[in-house]
Length: 538
Image (cartoon, rainbow, N blue to C red; front, side, top):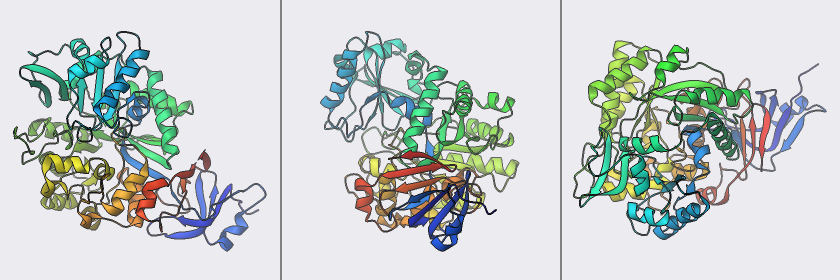
């Protein structure tokens, strides 16, 4: 008896991949794609038990792959005070939201908030410690900037972290003072004492975050993601939490784990001792790369640049490691068999990272290790040549242009800001750029990301070098096939070809023909299939 499909999708365009193009119908058997083709070719695979899904002209694509986000943080911060610009557009609204949470909290309970961007506030500056003191006089408060690299703390939070005017600034950190007094702003490594004073997340908190964040991703058509710094919230316990979540059916999305590798907080030794190196696991949960942080964020003026930011202070940002320290950590992970996926945004940080990768690859050659540069925002043509030669790949988040492009112009000037995140250039060089959201830095909602790839427009409408635009097919390829490539899984997922994983997203309109403004406006994900199971229906 001929195999009969479990699910057939028909009556709408089905985009199977850049090479495969569009077909009329798709058949799924168990967790894999059985066949893709014309209605007539697929019809014999429909049996009495086949679920036939009528697309009614809507577009189906491979499930999206957000190739750089923080799943645990995304899920856990969904319960924090929302200070994103759309929720708190003014300083008063932001302080009001904190005050409202304080009114419902017991004295001494931490109030955590994330999402503000000082360049979008009506005041155009970071909130001050005293303002947070007035909003929550009886509670410690930590307000995290959208980028996740800067925190504003009130007096009680600073006291609990043991930070005062005499505290020394740590390497790779910043404790801001004005007129000899703390403003409350802590950047990068300077935040550690306050973070250590916040009650640690339990394993159940972490699993609940994985589940909540993962369900949200499925509602957006995202079936795969990378968790970009496992170990940040709970050290090696996060590895156990992920495996428990998978065992107990609480891991909603395919997750590629990137291990925090920074000296002093690395979980790599524990993982290596347990035999967990890159590629260990299965299609649902896999050990991915090792992550080191080299700098901060451009909008927060902490990304490490060769030329100073605009302003009186002549700062070039924050750098984390001496060259020798970074090269030692990179070589150690490379030698142990790990892929690396390191955070570098400014051109100086990218330069330092490429050099470290080149040295490791020269010492222990591996032409297909695919070391990644996460974000890679301000890379130069000379750096691109070296990346192509060494097989080093950029892993950007094009939605940064949408959310933060105007902030880049403000802190760097148009000449340096407009050509940042050069997507078209990377495409043309064969560097297979993936895309993602860095959630909770940006919302994982893919439609602003698509809009930016097509238009290079910011949320305000500023066009950031239109020469870096790509087509909708290229944008889809970045979100699917190149996402899989960045995780060395391009033969398993990212395309709807026979034998590939049956991960499918169905959108409310045909993105292939839609106007970019309409894609941004009100497009939704209507249906998500993961491994042949319908896991989300709007």
